[in-house]
Length: 201
Image (cartoon, rainbow, N blue to C red):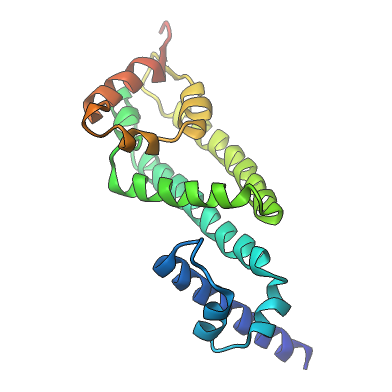
């Protein structure tokens, strides 16, 4: 009986989370209404509150999941590409990084900015994305170890480009500049100049 209850518990929780995602896609985070989430999941408001406590609890779970998925997708996509290369050149490094106007990168940035803004007043969400970010930082360090092991002779990554520039700054602000902002070519030239430290062979 306990196993059956746990299965039902998981089914209800999943339906509520899927409904919450649909509501966010349709109306945004600010437009999410718990009553609509409950109706979309075919469960009562009482059940939503029983599983997630309140609106903030529901947002902490669903937005925390989305944030985790975005960071994991970006990391796994990057590493899959790097692992497909027998030797990693400077051009491979530069061209593998997201550009300021790449549609996928910008979509992820917009969602991440919304989640970060929501986390200012939502303590459980803030704690969740802090933990996710720390875990992902550890994964990136291991990934960069691998990348460095495959670099062409004479090159060494300046990891500050990843840990300071790419992780801390948000390229979304580039879109606010419109035509007066830097181009993709200018961005890549900048990254090319600072990404790799030359070493004596």
